[in-house]
Image (cartoon, rainbow, N blue to C red; front, side, top):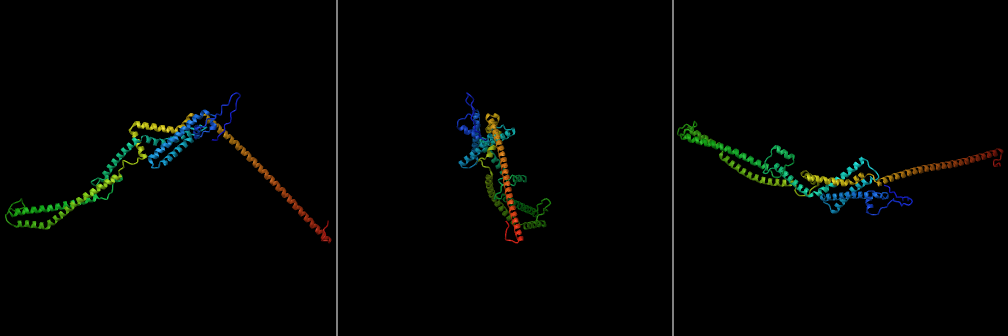
Length: 448
C-alpha cells in the first residue's frame, strides 16, 4: 500500500480544522503496523484506531497461541535442547502470525467476495485445528496417559494370549487350521530348541517298545500254552479236545514238548528281552532329554514372547495420545462436549481476525484506503500518459534529428559532386588547350 501524506485541511472562517488528527506515538502504532495499517491514512479516521488496534492484538494472540502449541508438541515428541525447541516454536508462531497478518492486510480497502472469504476462513480453520490439537492433548494429559497405560495393558494381554496359543508350552503340534492362522498373523516363534524332534524320538521309541513287548508277550503266551498242554497230556489230564487224557509219555506228549522246544529256539526270547530292555532304557533317556529340551524351549519361548510384547512404559507417541483422547470421548459424554467446545473456541480464536474484518464491514479507513488506491491508480495513469507523451516526443525529436543528419549528408554529397564536376571540367579544358597548342605548333605554350 502506498503511503499518502495527509494534506492539511482547509480552515473555514471562524472554525478550526478537525482533520487530520495525528494520534499519539506508542505501542498502538506499532501494533497496527503489524497488520498493514497506514497511519497517514488512519489519521483521517481516528475513530477506527481502537478497532484496528484490537484486530492487531487478535492476530498477535493467535500467533502466540500457535507458538505455545508448537512448544508443547516439540517438548513432548522431540528430544532437543531447550533453545532449539524455543526456536521451533517461535518459527511456527511467526508462520501463523504472517498468514493471519496477510489475511488482514490484504483485505484493507476491499470487501472480498464470498469465495475469497470462504477460502480464507478455510485456511484459518485448518490452522486452528493444527494449533488446537497439541493444547487439547496437554490439557487432558493425565487422563490420556491413564488411558494409554490401560490400552497398552490390554494390548499386551491380547498379544500374550495370541503368542501363547500359537507357541504352546509344553510343546504340542497345532492343527493345520490354527497353524495357518498363526503363520498369517506372524505369531510363530522360531527357537534353537527342537521339542518336536524330541517328542518324535520319544514316540518312536515308545512305539518300538510297545511293538516288541506285544511280540514277546505273544510268544510267552504260546509257550505257557504249550507248557500247560504238555503237563496235561503227559499227566493224563484231559483239556477239551486238545489232550488225549492218557497218562504217560506218548507221541502227543513228545510232540507238544518238541513244539515248545522249537518255539523256544525260534522265538529268541533272551535276545529280544535284552533288546526290549535296551529300548526301554533308550526310551527313558529320551524322556529325560525331552524334559530338558522342553525346559529350554519353554525358557526360549518365554524370552521371545517377552521381546515381542509391547512395553507398558516408554515414550507415548502423538498417535497413541490422539487414540486415547478419542477413546475418552467415546466413553464420557462430558469429555466429548468439552473437547469439541474447546476445539471450536481455539479455532474461532484463530478465525477471529478475518471474521471480525468481514462482519464489521467496510470502515471509514477502508473507504479511505480505497480512495487512496484509486488516487494512486489515477496518478499511475497520468504518469503512464506522461511517459507515453515523452516517448512520442523523444521519437519525434529523434526522427527530426535523423532528417537533419540526412539533409546535411545530402548537401555534403552534392557539394563534393559539384567540386568533382568542376575539377573534371577544368581538366577537360586544360586538355583542350594543350591539344590546340600542339596543333598550332607550339606545344609548350599555353594560351591565356
